[in-house]
Image (cartoon, rainbow over all chains, first blue to last red; front, side, top):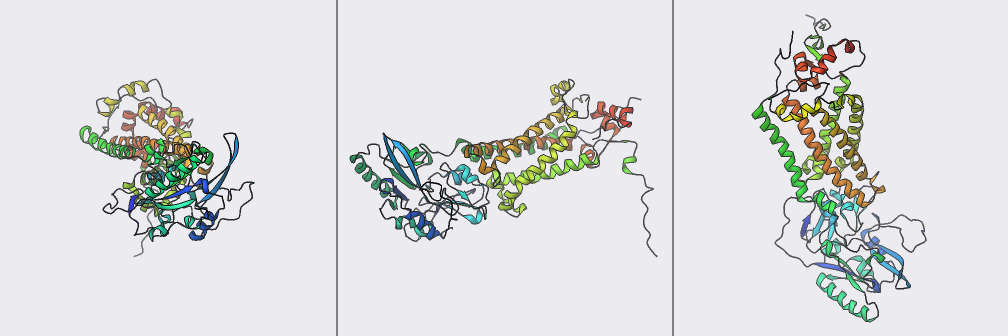
Length: 289
Length: 231
């Protein structure tokens, strides 16, 4: 939903600049993976606040449940069993939209205003303008947007834009029992993460690191990863960026070249006709006998 | 006084004019225009999705959501009609030795400095257009299927869909240039549009533009219906 109290920083498929006079505080969600116990309270809170209900699924033999993100599950605890430094590690990651500073979904979206980026950093889908083309999923380097079978529209975590707009923290933050989730200004969250990293390194997690990938301009959901040298072990891409194909396809060069080509063909036709004139055949052309 | 019905059967028919030669059959013309209509609808909807300046074109389809649903169905329609048509005319589009001369002097042809005798039903420019459309439509169909939500896209990886989207847009613009040249060439070469609307060309037109085809049309073989060069 579009909220007037959140200033718009970028709007999909829009040719005019967004209003830029005001500035708002850049916010972020910090997910401290080292504190997460995998209780799934955040999943429940997300469904509760957003009025979503996943269809009961099938036990696939993993703790990850439901099996994947969907139009009804905007956040999902993913469980991984990984061999790290000779021991089995049970890794848990709260998956969902990372709210990129340079969102590939917004870049790819062809429908004006179907994806908004607010100046506080939240990236929000406006389903009423969604045409169901699937371009956002093509643009996303994290495989986040999911389509509803019912309405063919794309859904994902809003970072509770409706709550944040009125000064509340996102529902998952409010419910987290171990303070694995925090919400505040991005600056504060980075400082808190730094503090936490020092602590983790002292406790033997020498490679603990912050996940705030620069390839997408940083994100507004950042992670403290105890095994920060191996983001893939948590299902996170090492160096995510919007694919070069998408950059080329949705970039201004290709768009301008396309439009230029169109007008060039039109102008070439008009000029040729004016200069050369129509090719007409005389009625007795080629008559030999 | 009571109006009476006009009896039009005794009137001379358009196609009875001895000065006219049949160039495109009913089936060929109808297929051509069906493909043309599908192309225009595909072009406008594709353009609306390609560039936000043209998103207003989605209003022609009752909004973006329905346009997005319609576009791939139109695409398949175009491909089916085009290849059905292509299956009938591909032999006439095989490049012959004599086409080399036409291509070498294409610039002279375009500037009305020369008209190169054409052996078959189509000149070398038309043949290249034909084959480029065969390739473009295949490329658009293939890349379009990869992106087609919700039916086919979920079975392809994100990188396949990204590549398909880029290829689709790229080929679409090659095709636009091709169609632009095709439409202009038809407008420029007087008599061509009438050939594709009413089916007939004048004998002078046929002798001038396609002398080889004209001879074939007027020779005994064609009259005996061995193979219909107007197909």
